[in-house]
Image (cartoon, rainbow over all chains, first blue to last red; front, side, top):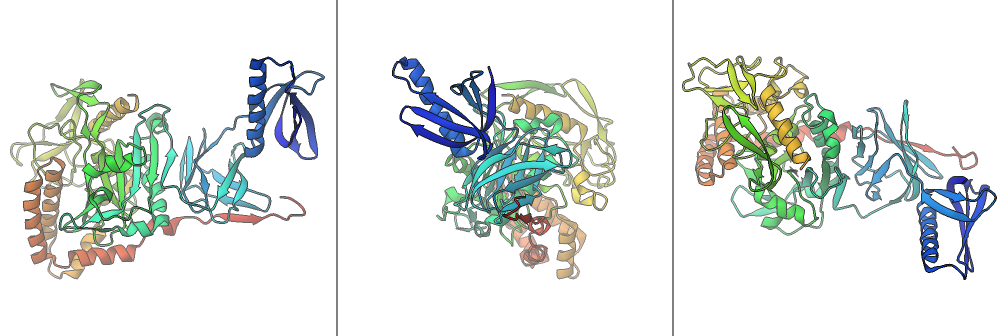
Length: 473
Length: 97
């Protein structure tokens, strides 16, 4: 049975007949029709109504259509909207963030918007093989019907019709939907509406709420730090294609109250996450997150910090052994891991990924701690990436520990930094011994190489299994 | 917690002549200790230590917040500065593309 594919250039409704002209342009078309005949059975009539609705949808949205018809007949037997190899996500709002999913997208891709008058080409702020992000859909793209495509020297996608509007901006934008299931592993980036001041229970508006552009410029920086630096924890085997990413900027949250405050100012310049507020805050937008970042525009308090996940130890889990003891990677959480980031944070380091390293770990079921301070052991909790000697003068054991039957050596030298003589703590062997651990002071890596710092071998394997347990729940 | 950036450390020392690395390190230890107490829900102990930290900073690094604000303002928003501009091509309406 012949199939004709093309765009519907014109649709007319004549008494009981729906006619469509299909072709690449208005001057090159073929005419097809469907007729609501008086003798049609109820089922056949229902199918034809659905067909007519599909034709209207294809015309209204500019989607290509595949029409099946007889060899020498213009009567439509069936029709289907043609697929595209890319998919714009969410409404196209000028000066708002915009994302497009696809597959096999190369690093050098550009996003092209085209309409009758202009072609606007934009370099994405984030590129992954399965999606791209623009921090801002350019104001130079006209409102109304446009076509969007991805192009690179060795890559070209379909052209997808989109309707660009001038506003209002989306309050909670799904950047990438992740695995199609009820509880995909989710990472949220939120503009913090209210700051809790150093004196508790006093609130003031966070300056970031007057800087939507700054926030959305910071979002792809955060995601690039998580997904595109040398440490591949979150992108190994493209596991990030299963993760959901959302961004929230809600400019109408003006109430100075507890529920709108995700960040507390702590002395001397720390921005601390108010962990208890995150779940209910995201719930307003029907979102949940395993890990959430709150971005603050405070200029006095700029130093990022995190609070660890509280796992749900009553639900499903994946068991493992650490040294000789049995533990579990819980698949769900009671409270998400949370972290803060500053609008003024230095961007040449690994702050978002470092804070993710804390937030995505859990207290007391598996904590990943800072390695640039000595700290000390805490009973009743599993510390994954740090152990302590009885005395600072004791030698560091050659074997750090055993995870799931595999033995891991200790980092005898703390890469190039060396352990201070009064420290009792020691760490597992590094993946890259030439640079500090991602959870150590990455600013002290050789100049210009902070973003090449990686985890230690044990923590990498433990974290990979923990993420997989949650991704495949 | 984000480690102290070397340029922030230098800025603190410039603004407080005589301030030593050891004094900054002591501040860092207190901050880290408070952070970890907060992680494990020991909020009262964290609050007590926060008072000690505030006192220590008041004595040794009194312009801490002011210096950090100056650094933040001078640094600005690095991300926005680096973003490439879109390229816009006006079509000739008579000739199409």
